[in-house]
Image (cartoon, rainbow, N blue to C red; front, side, top):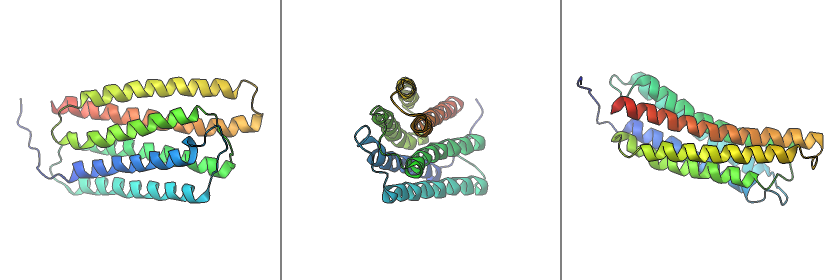
Length: 210
């Protein structure tokens, strides 16, 4: 096996952990706006939507820091393309969550199907797992349980999404409400899928570095 020079600089690992922690914050804000009142009267406050926008901006800054770092570093801890991909995957999760919150605010939605809380529980669990896993990239140890669990959670999210869509088209909601709510739940599903992309990228990195 050829010798691989790996720097001891922890900056990349710290930045990926910081990026994942932004997702934990984003999922918490999402739960405040959507999960806690789903099915019982939603208060799409401007203040919470603004908090989510701030969280998304903070996540963007971390993503930019990762890109600047990789562009200015001669030897990176693992493949440059994988660093770009992981940074982009993490950023996608936050973008989808922020867009979901923004649409709730813009559409002035007052209620959401109660099952939306299940989507948010999946996102919160994925965010926590990702934040716990990013520091382990430094040793590349004990990572398999991460992508296995994220895959399981993604399957759970898919099932919840299908139930919500079926409920939306059951005749309980008027056509305009269906369109608005479907936009939001599809964005939450996209965030769940984006977490799976993060896990898949982590798996690819681990395989290459093993």
